[in-house]
Amino acid sequence: MESTKPIRKIALISPNPRFPDFEGRLVMAENTLPLIGTVLKNAGYEVEVFMERIAPIPWERVLEADLVGFSAITCTVNRVYEMVKKIKAHKDVPTVLGGPHASMIPDDAVRYVDYVVRDEGEETIIELLEALNHGGDIRGIQGISYLKGGKPHHNSPRELVKNLDTIPDLSLVHGYDRLNPIQLLFKGIGHFHFLETSRGCPYPCKFCWRIGGKTMRHRSPEVVIEDLKRKTRFFPGFPNWVFIIDSYFGVNRQKSKEVLRQIIQSGVKARSFVFARYEIAEDLEMLDLMRKAGVMWIFMGIESISDNTLTHFDKKQTIEKVKKSLKIIRSYGIHVCASFILGNDEDSSDTWLKTVQFAKDNEVTWVMLNILTNFPSGHEELIPSHRVFQKNWDYYSGQFVLHYPKNIKPSELQSRVYDAYRYFYSSRAILTNLAKGKITTAFFQTYCRFRIRPFLEKMKFYIPYLKQIEDGLYDASGCLIESKLISLKKREAVPSFNRQPMESDLEVVSQVA
Image (cartoon, rainbow, N blue to C red; front, top):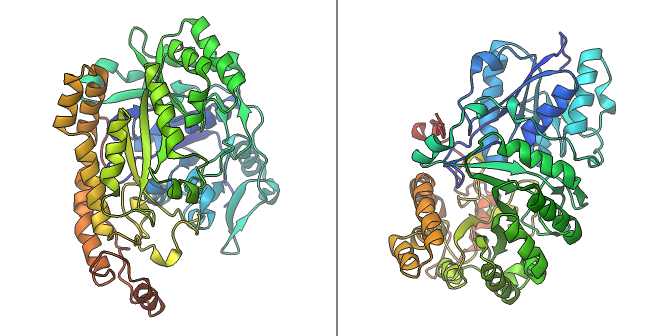
């Protein structure tokens, strides 16, 4: 659509997922929309950023905007579409969607919003607004998608952003300056700042899709430090938790070490998380600098305890190398949060127990258990399309079974993931760590035990429906009868679970009042 009036006032929205997720008891100002909002503010626009993880959306202010933009992952995109419908019922303003889902599946997104900004959006959004305000030709704007003649049309891709040194202005985020760390703590809610030092990841893991591409780009260390200082000023006198959101912190060791040294020299007191692979433990100087700079956690994608599965995922690691890495990392006093993926064709009914036991034996403090998900743009070789039964985006969070696994029924896989969480974060496990003097580990496992309850309840709700759609498709040993599934698919008689969520599910979880 063409704008009928000058666009001056812009609202940017990040919705919560329909169902509770692993981050449900965390308050985080995501990096994307504050960054886009800052770029727009610097270009002369009036901008407000609304994040449901921070505060409820004041719709009267959103409806005053001349353009409304959204950022969404797959499990939040249905809520975006509902919000767009609400906005359009009030007045016909341009709507724009960016983020992973819109970038992966623009054909879906353009049916609901006027424009899709694919991949990195800092430069694209400015060009789009210039065209809308001055009657420019949107056909020449790289990186956008829209309907043309009633059909999806995708302009050519845009090159990756080269200059990453814009510092997001968190004062644009509605309600952020009113957060109180003490009040959040008493509510059992954690708080994190997001900090970016680089973009890109050179590794080709088949299950992963991200904005930022494989080409590594780095922010200047001086800008990183200034960004960190501005964020920690929001809560002076309180411990500031910082999530360094680089896809792989330390891929360029020289640059990462320089950032760490400058953090140490700056005197900024923060406790940080980083994403890193097992190779981080090959550089002891890096680990020492990380510890001194306040890096308390490494989030490591271990993904599987099977070397065959790791090879299938193209993960470029072995489980033996991971075990050695975990031992070295823990010797430096740094905790590990490990991510695992269950539901691959090699997995069976006892994979969950072996996985959790591996995490315990190797002193992993947190685990995140994801279920293999074929995101629709995705990697057909991981899950054949005829085995994917779930088409409701609300369930694409990595916590729900969406396909027919080969050697375990969907309902059993869902139940085993449920059991794995309860086992790892059990009272017995926590008391055992306390008895061993692992106070920090016990504390964080207790917090996680409390945090995961809401989404575990949703898992239980989902299991009866899985039993319905799997009925008759597995043999007595629990193996998929694939020929029968294919036959049913051809006759369009395969059981499916494409319904809208039940009324009780449609209640948006209010994370922070």
